[in-house]
Length: 343
Image (cartoon, rainbow, N blue to C red; front, side, top):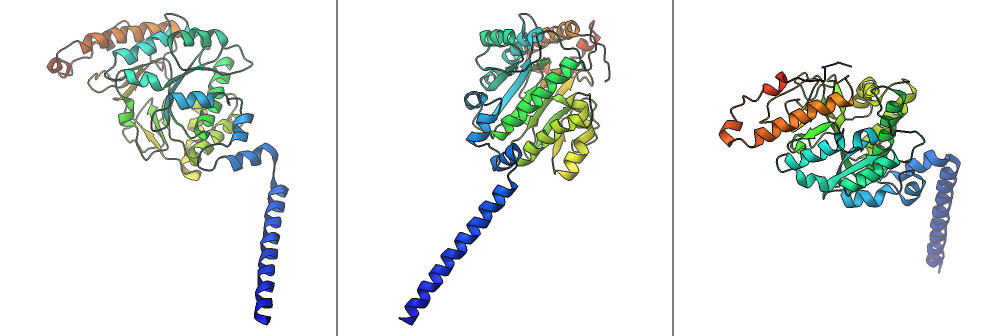
């Protein structure tokens, strides 16, 4: 009987102890709950957000669309446009055409999401592509946004917020500016162990050197807790360095991201991700061509990209032996309208 009484007293003590511990935990969480900030901390977990966070996000309607667009590795390709770039005959048409003329890359269109910044662009997008999403903003993005204008800066920062949300949902993304032609599969040059793989305007030959100048017009980010925090840190840095666009500010914080946050950033040789800043005319290797470092406006970009598209089409009709003779450099001698301006 005494043994039975002792057992009952031990069980009662255990229950009281568990109850007290749970009470302390609940009290601690209630005392430290700080509205939306605490909700965000509790939402990330394995890189996805819970239903509450999705309902509060201005991008909550995007989640079902991402599920349709993503590939089997939960990766999406994304670009963003306003009306100046999306109207008939402009950059969007040329961009989409490059997937059809490139080498075995037209299947990537099934995983391409186009972000529209205004209603006319969204309507135009839906007429040429199945996966379109309009960001709801209080800024008129219909007109051409020249580099570093107030409208341009607002546009690129709204893009960073959206990209963070995509990572929170557990999707990887490859962002590509719409003034880029795709010729081959760029994923072959995305490093598996890197958190972020990016093109570079002036590549120094070392893919691990953080001092390489990145170009955030073409970069891949893997979804994990580090990169979610990276995007938040990047967006918050706008307040530290106003007014500036996202690429310049990334240059100012990338050493902090690598040293303090453990972000692994890889830079890709421009022989694969090339552009007007550091142009490679080796069409046997090039995957993408970016009309960057062009200070002459949208018309100049269109002129030179169309010229290069025609050049690529001629190149693809050649016999294999002639393609590989590596003498295709004549495009650099054409009447280019994009002067190689360094920002």
